[in-house]
Length: 277
Image (cartoon, rainbow, N blue to C red):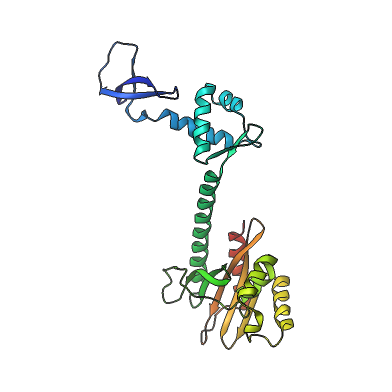
């Protein structure tokens, strides 16, 4: 075993840390100890991370006494670390003196979750282009009041994911648009229609025809269009039971898919379900 001679000291919070002096020597004094060379960790940082762990795993938060007892820490030292974590937003203290995870911690967790979600979208699109190499595959969401593909793959470059290409899709005449009107919150749709009034578009002769198409999408749980502009199919994706966006395929003319619409729908619903959490 590789050993180092290290000096035991206390940091400002009263936690032990070790200062490496020399390797493979021994000094016969109580203030020296032998410790593995790779274990010179910052003990106060470890304790702070331990606090985040126990608080994050509690149902209703923890008091200073709870934390001190669970981590076998002296209350003054625990208090100093808690105060520091609160100052940085990683913990919050409520009126009852209980500590919970703070906004800074939640933002990190949300960011990690979003990166994971986007990675899953990429994997789903790669699988789709493998099944339907002649199609454009995409994942769309509302960005402000515009319907945009956040990720897409085109047949000419099946190994490259295009992200936020600046393309916008038709809100009132596309399967993704129908699904957004079918499942988005009312306030979101009101914002969309303020920016893109239905009357500015000539997609349908009447609003009733458009509403019928939206109702059909909601009933089926997917939407499709097969006309002179090509075959377009989309399925909704839900996150935490709330509508998030659509995964879809587009076969531009004169491309003809070798598989049936039912087979394409089944694949899209499969990947939409995998993305939905």
